[in-house]
Length: 141
Image 1 (cartoon, rainbow, N blue to C red):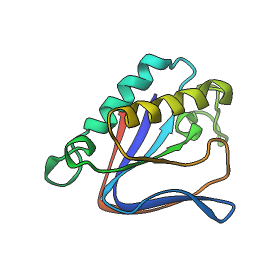
Image 2 (image 1 turned 135 degrees about the vertical axis):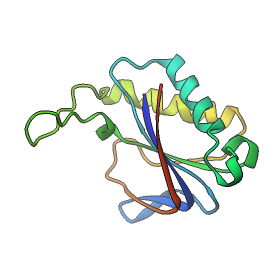
Image 3 (image 1 turned 60 degrees about the horizontal axis):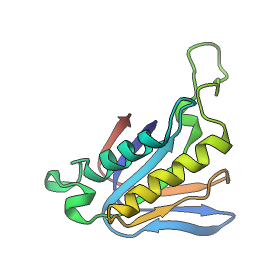
Image 4 (image 1 turned 60 degrees about the vertical axis):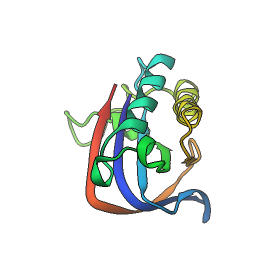
């Protein structure tokens, strides 16, 4: 499981011109990719890492600052570009495997008390954010 976590002052995701998820205060925008070998245990670990990641101002985490997260599924994080000019998606989990694991990460975050907004799995989404710093990290489990 792989996530790109960006510290933001605000972020939103729209589908067909309608906002489906947004955070309007400092927090994390999380682009989340699911690998073919990922499972529910990794979803729990990823949620914990994202919630406790000390990358907000003053080395706070979403857990300690009560900051929100916007989680957007992003299968392209597992695109392999080593050969040629067209990415290979063989390492990205198929939608029927990936969607429940994205949902599991979100559920685990909410179970930890986090405020979580989301995109819409499988939809063409437009993601907008105001990066803070900018400060962006790659998180893998």
